[in-house]
Image (cartoon, rainbow, N blue to C red; front, side, top):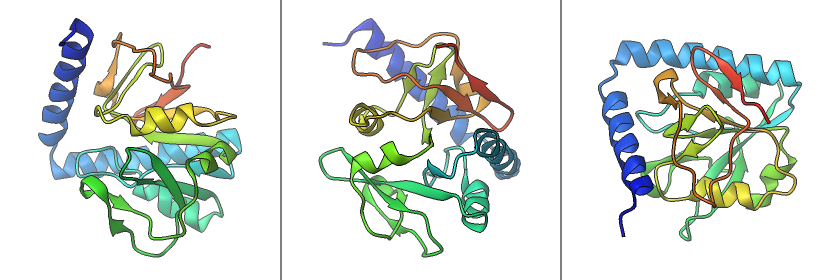
Length: 194
């Protein structure tokens, strides 16, 4: 049964997908540099020494400048690995080139760590389709990160990494949706009220 909430989510996903696909190579490069600076700023501000992050798809906000900085500055980064049961495992970011994973997404080639390894991070930086001003995170509909976040105890602060246009006033929230602490965009860092 299609509900108003599921239809709204589908509509937002389609609009975000189209807007991101229309972004020029020059804009993507500019956004990647600015996003790297914001992610470094957040990690330095919080004093985080172990974080999670991700390897981007072609249209996601690109954190690779941050990943290079983290490797050079001794910040451990856990990167997700998609498992067949729509769960996540993690591996530490390293200089070893990533390998193609499920859904065509690059993944780290290192030793697999369980989903609960992310509970040892000081900060979780995760991709999203969109986020609203109350911390509702909209993913792409497969639930990988919702399940991963629900499995963590303790749950570190979670920041969704999106573009500025991906922050909405309000999005539908389902009972299984885990709210995020804030967002990081190429232009800003937001922390939502608790």
